[in-house]
Image 1 (spheres, protein in one colour):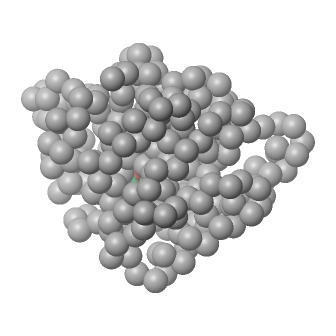
Image 2: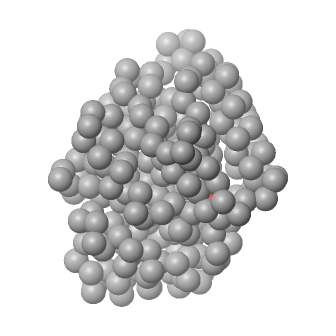
Image 3: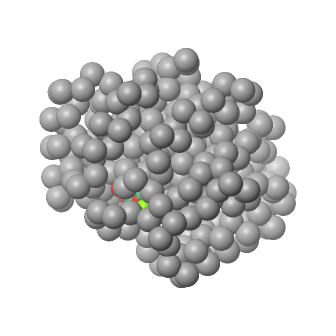
Length: 237
Ligand SMILES: Nc1nc2c(ncn2[C@@H]2O[C@H](COP(=O)(O)OP(=O)(O)O)[C@@H](O)[C@H]2O)c(=O)[nH]1
Ligand SMILES: [Mg+2]
């Protein structure tokens, strides 16, 4: 198996982090925890676990800036540490660690970017209220239509990038923080001609801790999608 690094951003995931690392342990992946100085002590838990588990390392950032900047810092670290595959995954068990090998397998079978997808046959969501479902599905629909993509799940955060994608797309130009970060990463990948594949997953709402989703994150995506389309039309993507 190629060297694979799971980037795991955390903000107040004290109840989830240790169980998540234990679940990832048998999979043969490296895990990079990216903690934004969580007030609940997640960063200290991560340091302790990194001392006990040799596949775990930690990137501490000074403050919470959103998922996008945390992932970008994680991608850079993973690439400089030699990862061939770089994964994104939430630390709240919404993404099933057992699905990690399926995303890796999709890249080994030829995908440059494998997306865990709720909106292809075989995928879905569990325990999500109607509001979250409408926002999520509507967000993907909006982005799919405006960007002219055939991809069904554009806002999901369970992904596996091949190294060459992250070396090709302009990471420095990405300023999105929330769902827009997921849409933008996938769109830039498509624009560079890479092969994107959707792998069906079931997304389960978290049981412990709290979502950091906010209205600002939704508005960012609403504005960013047409901006991305215009940038592409102007030849800048
Ligand atoms: N490092 C870092 N992690 C974050 C930030 N915001 C969210 N996360 C983590 O990203 C993952 C997904 O966030 P979550 O709040 O569950 O989003 P939701 O699933 O869309 O409700 C979780 O592991 C969070 O701890 C952030 O600003 N910085
Ligand atoms: Mg979540």
